[in-house]
Image (cartoon, rainbow, N blue to C red; front, side, top):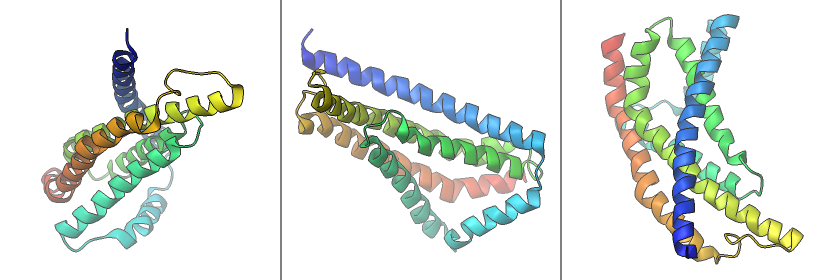
Length: 208
């Protein structure tokens, strides 16, 4: 098997493994946070006040402003993933997804008293979340390749032994990652932001 075919298969495995793992981690962490909060039953008014303070500076007067802020927030979160992937530490770039999953569990708990959890998930999270989390998971798959490449080259330098991926020239290796990011992740996050800004508020009015 030539290296081009082997690299293509390796990239495919990385993408599917990280896509499935990201969705599994998101569901499990969000459910755990929700169950822990439901069991501990902390003062919900204190949590609500903290959340209102956290988002007080990002409220928008129009759907367009909301779209711009959400789109920037989504893109910034993905950029943080790529920045963390440059650090030669495995799985460090997953911290952002874990934090996102925890925040989803928190939001579900806070809003459970006003809206049934199932309806809240279907109306408030699923429409934009399918695109947003899928793009986030795909970005993790790209970041995992970049992180492996960085770590492989670092080990080569430290131990003077070679991994065939670490021997690849950096630009031919990174170019497909950049192309997939621009063609899949960026448009997908923009679509998710549009749905969250224009469709989700309307759906929430129907279930409350």
